[in-house]
Every structure is written in C-alpha cells, then in structure tokens.
Image 1 (cartoon, rainbow, N blue to C red):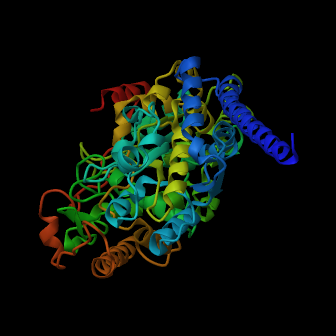
Image 2 (cartoon, helix red, strand yellow):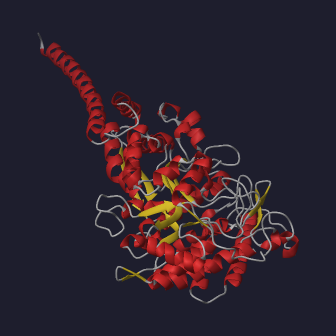
Image 3 (cartoon, rainbow, N blue to C red):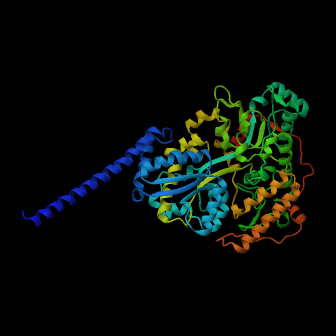
Amino acid sequence: MNNKKKRAHIQLLASVMSVTIMALSLNVSAEQYSWAAEKWADQRFKRSTLTKSEQVAELKWFAAAAKPLRDMKINVASESLATHQYESNVLAEAFEEITGITVNHEVIPEGDLVNTLQKQMQTDQNIYDAYVNDSDLIGTHFRSGKVVPIDHLMRVEGGDYTLPTLDLDDFIGLAFTTGPDGILYQLPTQQFANLYWYRADWFERPDLQKRFKEAYGYELDVPRNWSAYEDIAEFFTEDVQEIDGEPVYGHMDYGKFHPSLGWRFHDAWFSMAGGGDKGLPNGVPVDEWGIRVEDCRPVGAGVDRGGATNAPAAVYATKKYIHWLESYAPEEAKDMTFSEAGSVPGQGHIAQQIFWYTTFTGSMLDKRLPVVNADGTPKWRMAPSPRGAYWKDGMKLGYQDVGAWTFLSSTPKKRRLAAWLYAQFTVAKSVSLEKTLEGLTPIRESDINSDVMTEMAPRLGGLVEFYRSPARNEWTPTGTNVPDYPKLASLWWMNIGRVVRGEMAPRQALDNLAEALDHMLNRLEKTDKMEKCAPKLNEAGKARKWLAKPGAPRSLLPDENPKGKTVPYNELLRSWGDAP
C-alpha cells in the first residue's frame, strides 16, 4: 500500500472512530441526565403527589426537552423568601443536573427586584431572563405590551418546551395572574396570605376568660370585628400586663419609614376596613387602593373623582392603625419593617396580631420558642381577619401575595425558552410538594389536599385548613385597577410615614396621597405608552356627590365603633368551609 493510500485509510479510520466516540459520548450524556432524574426523585424529591414512576417520567421529560438548550447559562431573579431560597439552592442545582442548563437564580430584596424589572421594561435591555414578581403588577403587565403571556409561551412560542403534566387547573392562584382580557400573564410559584394570629393558649385560660367577660361583657374568643380586636388589645396591654412575670402586649405591627410601610396599607388594609366595593378578586368599580375604574380605565383615586383613597373608611382604617400601634404594641414596633416585625410574635409576649403574613409560619415552629409546645404543636393559631366597621358581605377580606414567573419580550427568545423550562420545573408536581413543605407557600390544590399536608396540619396552626377552604379566594392580591404598580406604590409609604411620625393627621395625609395618586394617573395618561386601558381621569367634582351614591366611596358612619363580637375558633373553621 503506497503512502497516499495509507494516509486515506488512516483518515477513514479516524473519522469512523470520531463518529463512534461522539455517538458513545451522546449516549453517555443522555444516560447521565436520565440517571440524574432518577437520583433526584429517589434522594431529594421523596414526597410528591405523583407515583414514583410518574415522577421519574416527568423529570426525564425535562432532560429530553432541554436537549437543544443544553450548556446554556441563564439568569433569573426573585425576592427574599424561604421558598425562593429553596428554588435557588436546591431546584436550580437539580435542574442543571437533569437538563444541562445552568441557572443563576438570584434572590434579592423585593424593592431591588421591582426596580430592575421596571428598568428592563423601560429600556428593553435584557437584565434577567425571567423574574418572579408579585401578581400585584398584573395591572402593569396586561397594559404594558412588554410581557410575554404564559398563554403565548404555551400555545405559540414554547409549545415544545411546555410540560405536558403542568396541569394549570391544579393551580389555586391563576385568577390573580389573569388580565381582564382573559389572558394568563404570569405563572404562580408561591402564595401566602395575611391573616389574624393569636395566642390560643392564653385565650383558653379560664381566669383570663372570666376577667375579660367581666370587663367587656362578651367572651374572650377570636374577634369578628375591629371593635373586639381593640378590646382584646386593650385587655392584654392594660389589664393583664404580665403573664408568667413577663410583660405582654395586645397588638403587634410595624411602622418604620420604609417601602414596606406601603405594603402594610395597600396590601388590603382599606378593604379589611370596608373601603372598596364588593367583588372578587377585587372590588368593582373601586378596589382596595381606592382607585375607580370605568371600562378598564382608571379614572381617579380621590373622592372628588369617584375614588376612595381618602374616603371616611380609609381615614377610619388609618386612625385605627395609628391608635393600636401607639397604644398596644411594643415601643420598638414603630421602628420596624415588615421583615423585622414578622417573627416578633414568636418571642412569646404578643397576644394577637390583626395583620400577620403566613410567610412567617416557618419561623414560628421551632420547639425552642416559647410559643411552641414540647410536642411541636403551636400554642398559637391563625384565623380569618376581623372586619372593619365599613365592611360588607361580598368584599375581599384580606391580602394574598402571589409570586409568579414573568417573562419579558426584551429577553432573547432562546434564553426565554430556557427560563420557561426552568420556571415549570420549579412548579412541577415532581417537586412542588417538597417545596411547599419547605416554604409553606402552597400553589397547587393537589399538594394542599395531600396526605402529607393532612399529617402536617396540627403543627401549622390553621394554615392547611385555610388553604383547603374556598374562603382563601376572599384573600386576594392587588388587582388590575392599578395601572403602574412601581410608580404608584412608592407614593403610599411616603405619605403614611408622615402620620406615623406625627407630622400630619390621617385625613390630611390621605388627601395628599389621593392627590399624588391622581397626579401620577394623569401623568400616565399623558406620557405613558400603554397598549390598552390607560388612565383617563374624571373631572374633579364635589365629594358629596360621590358619597351620596351607592357603593364606594361611602359616607361617614354614625358609629364606627359597634359592640365587639367574638366567635370560637372551631366555629370560624366551619365558616371557612362554608365560604362561597
């Protein structure tokens, strides 16, 4: 064989070997991802509503679907909650091993998250490939034209990357992430509510029950209205004063001049007082922010334009907040933020809290805490929120936070598809029950009704009962009346903060807030390029004209402090089950 033929023969052998090695490598690679799916199902995602074979099949689907996207690295962001820490620390690692896609899942403060999201929407420069942001921005998203709806991802752009077992009907929060146009814009990945929290062990003490009834004329039980809440706050702070030699307080809250002070109010405080209109998930035509909408267009927040931000119910709610904070809460509460105040009841000196976020449930379960029994069961319970004097049947009862995956049109398509695949992984039935047990922020009906959650229920103080009840639908996020959440939300804490500081009376501050909201709505009407349902302000008129009409805004009640009403806890649980 001459040299020329030898070289050709060697080249042919090399080509054959290269193809063979590549085929073996691809086969090993495919097996590697398949093995990873089985490993995570066996070792980490042991609890699931799926059978083991269904779980492995679902995880292997991710491995197969990701093949065209392998070796990519994507960036996503969410706010600082235990659920998102779990996604970042555990689920991102699992997703990479199963799919070959690396995820940099950053967990950052909520304010930074909203600011970054807003920057990307304004500049169209891709910063993150997906965001977990509150469904409170649904009014922003459906108007902006900057968001790629989940419906579009599933049916048009990402059909090949949409999990066949995603099962949207199993999600409990889709009503909150759907626009008035019926389009699904965001995919929920965590939910938590604000409920009433109280020390059940103290409320059940015969000596305290006797003293309370003698002083107030009715039973010491879960308050049904704000009058009873105030009586109980006064009782523990001024009458009881100490339990087991330690000072106790009848109320807990927070009041620091900080963005989270705004959440304390526009997260449904006015609706709990009765400030908006009837309607679920939000009042129609006036929502809990006090913004009136006509034909999907915001027309005003001030009473002089038909809104209710500075209506008597809002003034009443603000006065109660200030009175209770100053009279019945620990002195340090005024200087606390949302995150700083959340775990304070676990220290053992708080009798009740009217506005308690269930995201703090996990921090209240440690056996070493004075609010937990030796067997791990809580001495506390969560219950439906008391209602204010202006509240009517058919109104929302409180706030529910829904963190949801959001995708922007400014993200390159391939990166968006990889992020869409990861988002589905974080909510897939293979992993969702373990995630629920970790963060206690459930999103799926199947997880809530699982045997695992039934077993956990006695240790969670009412959380499972709440989420199994249809009453959960009466606790809702900010809705579509708010056309630009980032711009409008910042106005709340700056005005309410002046009341906390004693610089301004509640009525004056709310007048200023309503004026600022209307000014911003007017700016949005004139300068923003919303694709649909942009604000169109009503002409300012006489407040009495609007107060004389049915619904919100309502005129001043002759008696804002009716007699207190309480109800036994077990009866309240039954009322959850009877909710529409």
